[in-house]
Amino acid sequence: MQPAETYHDKGYYISDPLFSASELAEVSSLLDHLVARAADCEEMAKDCVFERDQPASKRGGVAIEPDSKAVFIVGDVPRFCPQLIPFLTDLKLVDLVASFLGTSDIVMHFANLTMKSAKIGSGINWHRDFLNKFICPVAPSMVRTMICVDGMSPDTGATRFLSGSHNEPGQAASDVEPMDDRIEVAACSAGAVAAIHPLVLHCGPPNFSPLPRRNIVIQWGRTDVPLATDFKESVTGKTIECLRAEVNRINY
Image 1 (spheres, one colour):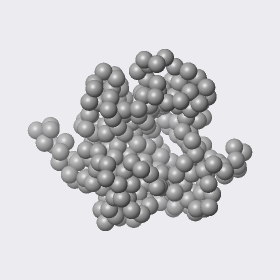
Image 2 (cartoon, rainbow, N blue to C red):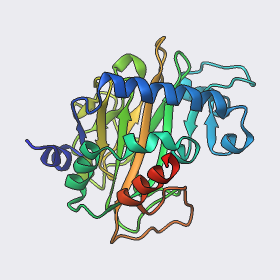
Image 3 (tube, rainbow, N blue to C red):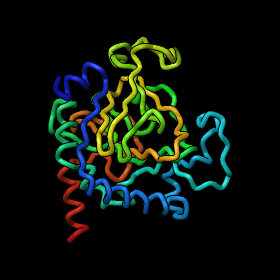
Image 4 (cartoon, one colour):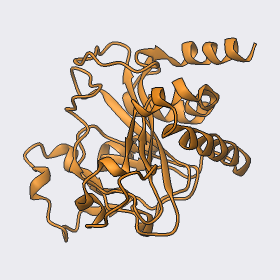
């Protein structure tokens, strides 16, 4: 099946690697600098969620030091690291998004780094991305993509999907059985992209491995579907052309 067919059939899609080894090395270096700044930059810290702020239950009961600088989420990464924008607007990624949304008239809603740190990375419970209280359109005409910088494996807390649940509005997140044979693990190589239907149920266990799991999460929408929420990041509502033009101005 074509990517869009798989996405609409299962409620998610996992690509082959879209980024080269050299591109991933550059992204990884930029993320290392970003994370290193997060805890010590007051402006950045306001847009971050740290592992110390997460309950131990999300790490299987593992406690961490109250002054730990381990990051769970860095919000608005294009604002704090505009050098990442060329990767976030990569043509291969944008073409995939357009095929999922059925139009090339797309905008970015937000972009963050969601990181499961080695040995202490928090898990995420079963949920759907629509509706959400953060940045959400009036209709489920959106898609979230994850650039899997390190890849994902069962050991590092790979995302799990309840395949087909985007077509089952009556399936509650709280009722998902651990042994449901529709659960599929999104194991993938570094540089792959995972696309998530707004109505599919998905989750991710903690990362107890010695390796980090870093995903750049981007929410995309259609230009003709307005937002129902008021909160905005620096990229909210901007087209690909607008974002690329901003990078060109910075470089110039």
